[in-house]
Image (cartoon, rainbow, N blue to C red; front, side, top):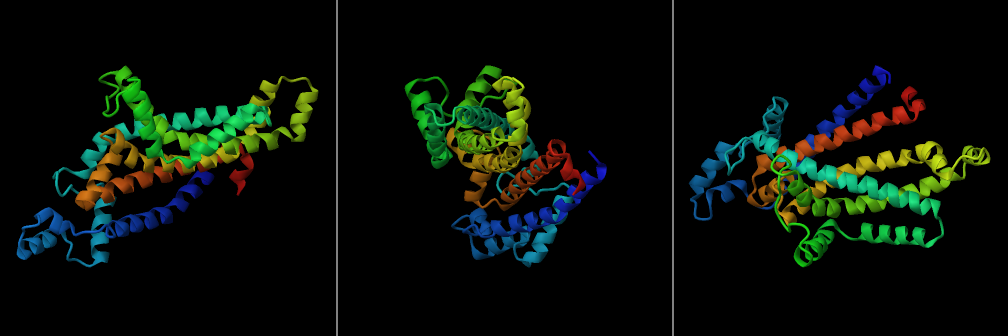
Length: 315
């Protein structure tokens, strides 16, 4: 992989990151309410509210506020929570392993479920297996993650008692308890992604199986499993790489609701609680970190194209 290719892609991220920072800072001010009033309390005097606004810098022009915030971000300072009085960076470092473990679990569900369903449907095109996968994919895409989460809780936690309905156990505390605590949230978060991947892979694999090189491999007597694994799947996976980059963004965004439903103390729940309390430094810092992570993952996906298709390195 030429260094110039990677450097070119990195440089192209700078304007994206700048636009993302503007969007995040601006959108937080669209949240209804006044952070100074919420922090001071309903019975606070106008003078007290004005003092808080001055202390927080809310009286400054938006451009000045943005520059102050961005300067802190560039120096590694995401601000301090208005209510917990804890640096946002400290709290994010504590909560991010929880969210990452949930996102990884959901990504495993997306990849394993999507690949298994897509390959099975493509190899058994027109059969009941194909119809079952396509029907399941349609249901998975149509059902929102919070609805799937509620169904899983009712069936597997309340009725069967296989998994805890709420709560989170760290892997250091108990690997078994950790696996039980993220199983249902991972399925709820990754089900839609698995459905999308299965549908996309089915179409790509069917197209690949009709190519001349696949016919040649069949004529040479190669087994169907080897033809799919060694030839057809390699070419069919290109659209899936792009799709997985999009799905990672969906998974990280979906943790806001799923963590709230299952009572998981991750970054998603941190953002959810902070929105309702108008804790703007937390919302801005946490969303910015998630956005940076999404940009980084899409950058890695972009770089992976160069490995799968060497022709792209020359563009």
